[in-house]
Length: 109
Image 1 (cartoon, rainbow, N blue to C red):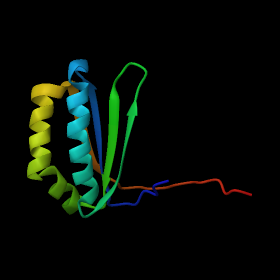
Image 2: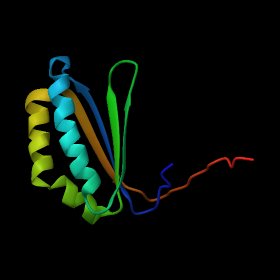
Image 3: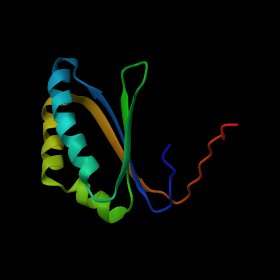
């Protein structure tokens, strides 16, 4: 389990894919996800899909500088343009800096 820390930058990316482009999207995602995980300051990413088909991806970077480097990366920007033109029926993005963090994990005994 990821333990959150203050100062981390978290992006919440909600979207709905156009079904006919699912395979091409998965290919693009594989490239972009590999790039993101290799970026300095990358912490984690997880994607969840709701019963109604909406997807939510949460991406965490260690700090604002590493998040900005990812946000401005040319290949990531290219993927964003392709997403708008081809993959997404709708999306929203919210980005924030963690001002409070806490975690709990029940110990095994």
